[in-house]
Length: 482
Image 1 (cartoon, rainbow, N blue to C red):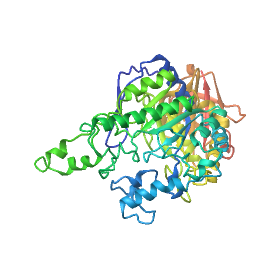
Image 2 (image 1 turned 180 degrees about the vertical axis):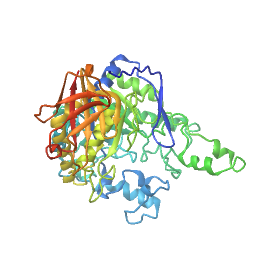
Image 3 (image 1 turned 90 degrees about the vertical axis):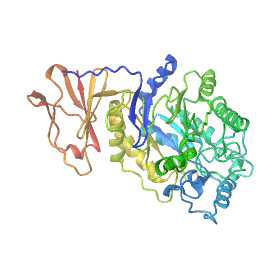
Image 4 (image 1 turned 45 degrees about the horizontal axis):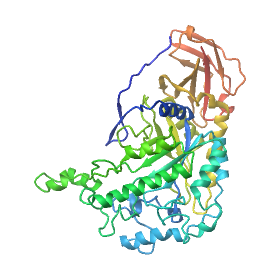
C-alpha cells in the first residue's frame, strides 16, 4: 500500500533549539508561494561568512559583543582586556583587509559541481562592516582606507553574486539587522551592554527612526543595485518588536521579584518596521523570499534551524544552516567534515522535507582552504549519480528507518541507504513498507545491475550486487517505480 500524508497548516511549531519554540505562518502571496516551492526543490545551497575579521581567524563579529560566552572571548589584538581598545583595533581591521587572491568564479564552479543551487552571502554581519559598496556608510570594503578598495573586484558582494549567477545559482543576501558600528544602534554616549541597542528606542524615537531608515536604505540598495536577489536572509532576530534583552534573561532566572522588578519586566522594542520593508522589497522584486530569522510572523518565509537537523519531518519550508569546518568564519587549520558526513547530512535533511545550507568561510587572502574544495568534490561525485533522488523530491513516509531515508518524485520512490566507511553492505535488503501493487520495477542508481525483488510477510526483499560497498561511496539509492 502507499502511505499518503495530507497536511493542512494554519500555523505549526517545532523546537528550533532547547530554549525557543517557533511557529510558521504560511505565505499568502501566490507569487511568493510559487517561488518558495521552487526554492524547496533546489535542496542544497552554500552559506559564506566573510569579513575583515578573517585576518585574525576569529568568530565573526561576536568578540566585540560584551556578553560572557566562551565564543565571544577576546583573544587577539594588542590589548584584549580593554574592551574599548579592542573594539577600535577590531574595526581598524578594515585598514589592512586585502584579499588579493579573491576569485569568486572558482567558488561558483566548485559549488555548482557539488550540486549546490543557491548561495547566501554575508553582505553585512553584526559588526556593521559592509562587503558591498554602500553609499550609506564608510565602514565598508570600498572605503579608500581599505587597501582592497583599489582592486577591480573591490565590490565583493557584487562580484560574488555575479559569479554565482553565471553558474546558474540563485543569489541570496545575508543581512544583519543589528549594526554594532552604527551610532544609532550602539550610541557612543553609552557603553554597549549586550547584543541589543544600548539606549531606549521608546525614549529616543528620532534616533531609532534614523537607524530604521538606515537599515531600509541599505537593504533596498542591495535589491536595487545587486539584483536579481532571490533571497533576503535577515539575521539578528532580537531586533524585533518587544525583544527581551539577553542580559535581562539572566536576571529573570536569577533574581526574585523583590530584588529588581524593573529589570525583570523590562523589554526592548526594536521594531525595525519589517512589514514596511518587505512591502518595499516586493515593489522592486515581487517574488523575493524574505527570511526574518527567529521572528515569528509572515516575514519568516522559511525557518532556519541552526547547526542542527530536526528529529522528524517538518511540514513547512525550512533549511538547516550547518558549519562545514568547525566555525562559521575562517579559522587557521580548519577541520572539514568528511564527504560521508556531508552526504548523509544532505540526505537526512531532504528526507525530512528541508534544504541544506552548508557554510564555507573564505580566508583573509580571499581563498578557500583546499579542504573546502575537496569536500565539495566528494559531495559532487555522489550527486552526479544520485541527484535525481534529491532535487525536486518530497518526503515519503516513513521518511527515515535506521540507516534508510525515503524521498519521492512523481511515480518514483527513492530509498537512500546510508553506510559508513569500511562497512560491508549485505547482499540482501528488507524494507517493511511496500506491497506488490506499489512496484513496477526497481533499479540501483549508478550501477547497471538487474535487481531481483520479492514481497513476503516482512515486506520488500531486494537482492543487491556483491561487494557494493567497493563500487559506490557513502550511500546507494534504490529507485522504485510504481
